[in-house]
Structures are given as C-alpha cells and as structure tokens.
Image 1 (cartoon, rainbow, N blue to C red):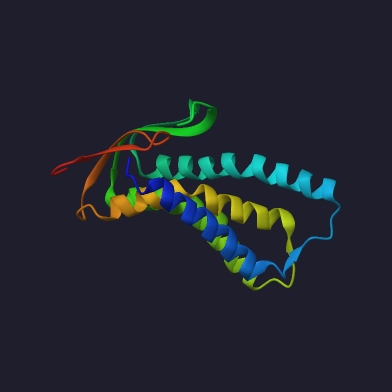
Image 2 (cartoon, rainbow, N blue to C red):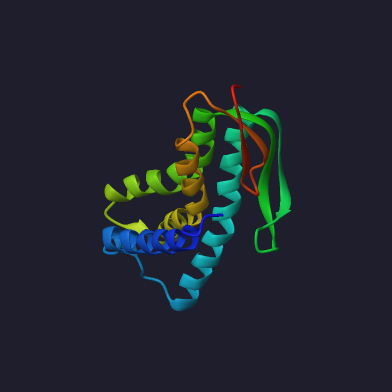
Length: 170
C-alpha cells in the first residue's frame, strides 16, 4: 500500500464533492423536509454499493476467464460487505473496463444527464456523488493497471480485496 494512498483518497473525496456541488447545486431539487432528505440519503446509500458491485459482477462474468461470484466478504476494515470474487484472468483492457464500469455508469453517465436537465432529483445526485467517492479504489487501481505493458494478463484471486498479480508473458 502506497504512503500517498490516504492523501490521494482525501483529495479524491474532497474534489468529488466540491465538483459535484459546484456543477449541479443550482439544479438539485432540495424541496424536501429534513426527514425526507435523510430518508433519500439512506435509500441512495443502500442502493449504490450493491448496484456498483453488481456492475463489477456483470463485467467480470463477461471478461474473466474463470469462476466469478458475488459474496459477502470482509472489508479492509473488518466489516461484512458485498463483493465480487473472481478467480481467473483478465487481459489488461478487460480489467480496465471491469474496474471503471461502475464509475462510468453510475457517475459519469448520470453527470452527463444532469447537464441536460433543468432539475435533478436529490436521490440521483446523492447516487452520483456517493458512487464517485466510492470509486476511489477503482480509479486508483486503474491507474496502477494502466502502467503495465499493453497485452498484459492479470490473474485475479479476488476483486473484493483488490489483489492482482501480473502474469509475465501470458
């Protein structure tokens, strides 16, 4: 684990929130009572992570040459969470798409849609921001993978724990 990872994560978190607020604050429908905002936040948070992992699962099923399943796994901080477990190999381009798909589909696509909307419902804004913040590790891993030579093959023990090993020459 890199020494700069916590700093990079805090920068990503801050920029994610600031950029979303700056770009879309005037468009977000905030005509809700406090309890409704809290309820929408809880619903959005409950939806984002399983949908994010489901997108990883779908792309793993398409690209991974091996066994893929969704399971309850232990997070890096020891809490149970939903995760994709893939045991097999990916080509570099496949792994890049697999890592970035939830970020693109739940943040970038929503943000592009927001640009063309007069008003944005609060729940969709929360989903976009939450997924953007939560995609830190996907983007971080993508930058690490991008540095590997083109045509590289990656053996994956488990994507939930983000362990990858480069297979030389395969």
